[in-house]
Length: 376
Ligand SMILES: Cc1ncc(COP(=O)(O)O)c(C=O)c1O
Image (cartoon, rainbow, N blue to C red; front, side):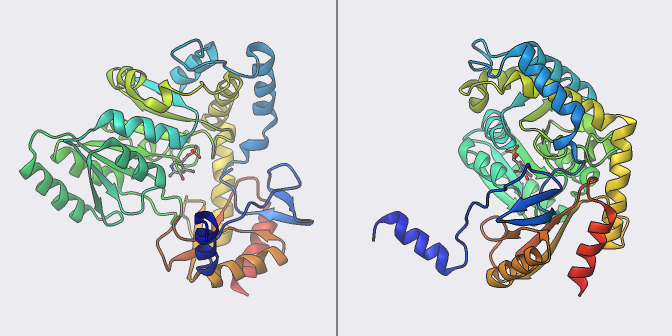
């Protein structure tokens, strides 16, 4: 059997083959899929900003002023005013010296980690880290070590053993503020105490914290008031910000080095300036009173679904087997709810799950209906 056919057959046998399911509507809180109208509990549009009129307007305005494409990489002639304005605004908002934007969060990780560490260094990852952190660590050529999810005692002993053998190596600890498939939060301040005790650096991926946590939505680092202690604050503009692209906030020197070394930044066409233009509007909204009101509505929806005062809009229902999870997702579709079945390799084997994600844009009665369906 030819390779693709064989591999696909194996995936199918294990309940792991994946398919594209196009929407027949715009992406939104209410979507049409395969002739069915569904409440969308699958997106990462936590604040509902992907359909915010002011953000759409500044996207269109950006196209009118700056054109559709950036025409080259940032270092050639692809840096336009909105790119720099967005980076300045992000640096200020994230209480950092400087910022750099990338075309995606995945590209940001692939740029940052190999620029920060190399062959004689170490990357220490939380076990549940996103694929982009794992792949970036592999690409860096550094030695990779993994600590159990949020286990600071294990992290401490791992760092102690690395430092004992390699006193001069760089150590980069990489973790997420909000874990994308588990909805857990990293114990950030305590983790920083451990990281600093061993003279290591921290890369914090705020993909799911940006927009959601902190008094002005700037993430867990803002919530715990520790931004100044984090070497790389990374996040994406594709989730709560409602657009696409990503950022890293760091010192002036680190950002200058990334401009010189981060290959997905250097060797890829710059994101369209219109995206940066609309991301500025998105950032303003996230930090404004309207943004706080959206976070409040989001928390009310979380309370409606979970009867808790959690701030995290990701609620996993771990069912274990692929078949049970796919069948639960299908019966939710029949009941009018789009909730994705998440399987290996996105999550460890035998921990397949439904991943419910909430948005401020969900009407509370839709959340109540989902709750009733889940508890029926
Ligand atoms: C934790 C985490 N980091 C990074 C990414 C990648 O971000 P992007 O979708 O902007 O590539 C994602 C999402 O896909 C994510 O969940």
